[in-house]
Image (cartoon, rainbow, N blue to C red; front, side, top):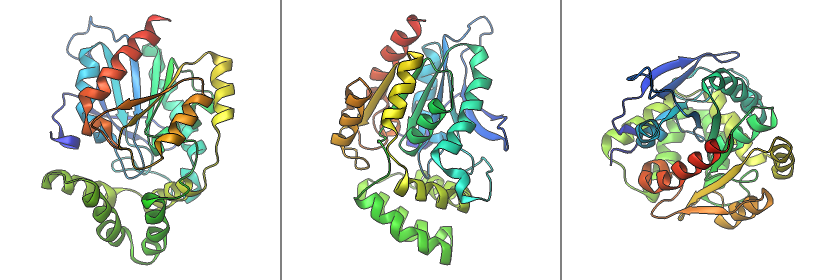
Length: 293
């Protein structure tokens, strides 16, 4: 498994954002066959310290099944520039940006929004900002901020270190160490993970990190909004997710009127840890949602 470096036919494109262009990977079935119109688009939002490459293993399979799959770097992440204000990286603010991106993609057909981890908080923000969605998928995400745990503690330790010593010091002393404790990745993947962290905006890393410690629970507001628009929702997590506890994710799913779906043999990043298992859930879900339109 090449994880984030999994070969893909997806094209590297730039999407217009309201303030900054957004780097993206676009796997579109109509690119090789103009007569093959996508049945819909899946817009994929990565998590904190993540990037569009986190979805590389599932982009071509989604396209091969007739769906256009577009994975982006959020503003300030990796190859997408972003604002200098830390406050601009709150999930509701980024959500409004992603709602506009979704609107730009939706003329190609119905759009399903998938947010992973912090990207789930942003996807929620997009839905609350009025994005017109055929479905919302929250992957290894939670109802609000981290309240405890290793990731919460790492954010607390990393913020003052980044302000004093910069991104490299934080990555090498906390992020890389914590990742190595969870699992081993090939050296070239480890190099990509470090490069993208250092390429990301410091204001973005600090702003998103703050959001992961203070973001309120907006599940009831989201439930009301999705109910009003009759938008279906799914909550999915890896069996060994170490971010939000599975009990919290299950409770969030119940509040949203659905059940938590578990991906076996996966932890916090099923798209790279068990892409086949994730696709076995995603593809029938997309078929069901889009067939109902």
